[in-house]
Length: 399
Image (cartoon, rainbow, N blue to C red; front, side, top):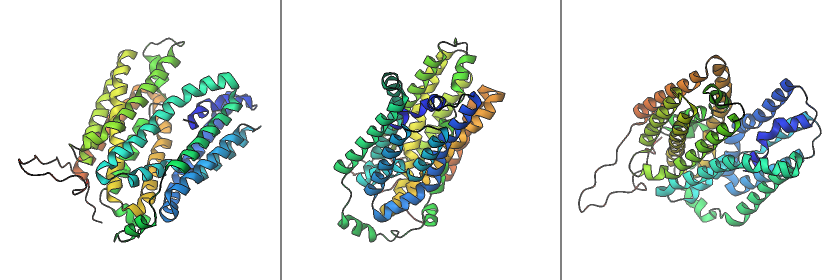
């Protein structure tokens, strides 16, 4: 939430720093917003590998402390390039997002991994949904510069929470992990785990489709006949509804995975999300969007959690940092490419963006179903205790 307290208002801040031309504001905003995820995508596997070696907790604390310092420093900059430089530094030291998923997977019993990952992803959805609302209120009260200090305080609270409340597995647990024949792995080994590359592709595809709405949704709302004065309100409501629905999907994914395999959940999620996107394509007025957006959001949230859980189930605990780092890289690449493709395609036809989402989700559902398989849970036999997920992993663990 601290991050999104200020980033949506970055163009206004750059204007305050003396960038007057709207084209230059757009250019600096794009560079400043793009450099951090680009560098994070490159370095996430590296930080994950270090976390496997030296511990997750200290790596998360390192990342959060860097954000405290950088966010605080942004409140004192005087030039646009200062913001760009600080955003680049953020990218170099980021990586807490992937590591928190790793910590959730490590902390949970195997049969509750989906629930743990889904809970963390729910928080990752709700933070950005609430951040701009609180950020707008804080900026109106204390100004944009001081809002950066409030954002730094949010990260400081996160550091204290991790330091005080998270208890990392001790040496005995690490010794047990070292007995795992797969405990010494490289990035190439991680990529070779069964269906890991498929899950990377699924995460990329779901993230790509999820972020395609950003550049064109307000324009689509206008195209459907909403007056210019109401466009910000309607668009904001739709963004919030989609984010909240995504959080619901993350949260309830674990319940779905008790009835279906991980690939089955992903396939179903892609199909439902495609239906939601198709409803948006054929919308005749803005009210239709309030039906399609929550359906789309719930499905994307469930599919993302299932993909992370499926990948986490085939990675040994000693290599989860590197594995989740690679998954984060695929997610961030989708995050970076989606607005670019949507922007260019939207210049031709806004509905074409949502049509592309339908096609992409349909193709992803077919690929995941045929490549990953879709084993249904076996019917129970009277008097016989069915095996749990701890005895029968979601995906094969063979290399």
